[in-house]
Image (cartoon, rainbow, N blue to C red; front, side, top):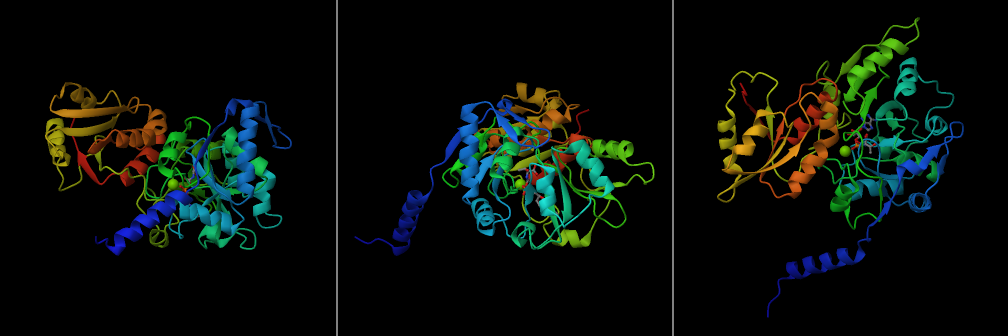
Length: 419
Ligand code: TXA
Ligand code: MG
C-alpha cells in the first residue's frame, strides 16, 4: 500500500500538537467578593474559590505563562509585560503580527510610575483624564523608557500604551502578580474580541492553560486609546472605545485648571489624518484585518445618505441581494440590529429566509448595542448562518466606537431606505 509522505507528516504533526497542547482550565471568579484598600490598592478577597483561582492564575503569570482574564471592556490575554519570553507567548498564541504593540495594564499609580521616566509628572490633561476615568476603559500613551519596557511590547514605538482596568478580577490579578501585565484582547488575531469566557474557550482551547471566568464584560468594546503627548496640546483619540468622546470633552472642560486652555479633542480619521500612522499598525486596527467572524458581514447603512454613485434600495431588494450567500435552497442569515428597526419586523414575516436574530437593544441605546455587539457576532457565527447583517448606528456616544468596529468587520456596505 502507498502512503504519500506529506499525509503521513501532516498526521504526525496533528497528533504531536494534540499531545503537546496544554489542557485549558476555566476557573470561576466572583467579582463581587473582591474589594480594594484605598491606600495600598491591594485586593481583599472574601470568596475562597475566587482567592484560589486568582492565586493560581497569578502564580502562572509569574512563571511566565499567559492567562486569559475578564476586564470591564473585553477578555484579555495577559502575560508579564516586562519579560520578553512571557510576552512573546501572547503573539504566538494569538497569531499576532510582531509590529502591533500591546497595552500594558497596571493595578496602581505606583505601578504606573514604575514604568515611566524617573520623576515623570503626568501632563495636566492626563491628570484630569485619569482622575475621571481610571480605573476604567481608557488607555493613555506615555513616553517609553526602553530600559524598562521591552521593545516587543511597544513594537519599537517611542510610546507605551497603559491602562488601569476597573474590573475587580483584572485589577486583583495584576496586584497579586505584583507586575504590569501586557494584554491584548483574548482572541485569535483578526477575530471579534471575546466578551465572555466561553468565547475565549472556543477560540483558544488547548492553546492556553488558564481562563478566569468573571462573567460577561460590562462595556463590551475595547478601551478608548488616547495620545495626549502631542506638542500642540491636543488630545487625540486613536481608537474610540469604552469612554465616549463626549465624556472626555466634558471631563476636560470641567476639570482643566483655569490657568490652562481646554485641549481640543480630535478623533483620528474623523477630525485629522496622519500619513505616518497610516503606514504603521500603531493606530489600532489600521493595518490589519479586525473583528471579522468567519462568515461575511454586510453593513446595512440607515443613518447616512448613500455616497455619490451608490443608490439606496428597499428592504426587499436588500434581502434579495443576500441570496447570493445561500449555498442551498434557503438563505440562513444573521440579523444584528436594534429591535425597533424596520428590518427586524420585516424578518418576522419573511418566510423565504431562515433568520437568526440577535437584538442590539434599541436604536437610541448605543451603550446596550456596544455591550452586545461582539457577543452578537460570535453567537451568530456559531449558529451556522451564511451572512450576518449589522445595522449602522449614528456616530455619537458609543455609536462612534460601534461604527469603528463594524466598518472593519464588514466586507461590504449597502444603503437601505426604510421610508
Ligand atoms: O480594552 C482593551 O483595550 C483590551 C483589554 C484587554 O484591555 N485590550 C485591547 O488590546 O483591546 P488590543 O491589543 O486588542 O488593542 C490594543 C490597541 C492595538 O490595536 C495597538 O495598535 C494599540 O492599542 N496600541 C498599543 N500600543 C500603542 C502605542 N504605543 N501607540 C499607538 N497605539 C498603540
Ligand atoms: Mg484586539
